[in-house]
Length: 69
Image 1 (cartoon, rainbow, N blue to C red):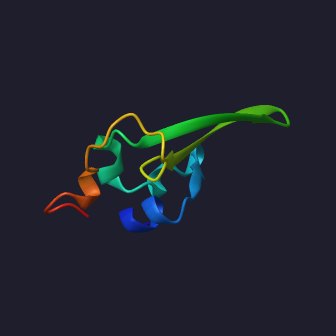
Image 2: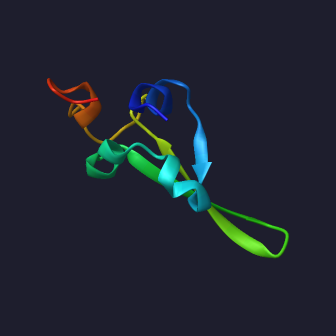
């Protein structure tokens, strides 16, 4: 998955699909997770919180910085 897709599409990926999260996202303050419980197991989902209006910082994410992608 391309960082733009992860950031813009508002997708969330289950923790078991961690390898689908773009590598650059792991250095980003906007990489967030949410725990859900369902069935017999709890599951974490990872998503990009950059588009949230109430984010805690206005820092540019690494994927939008010059040379990032």
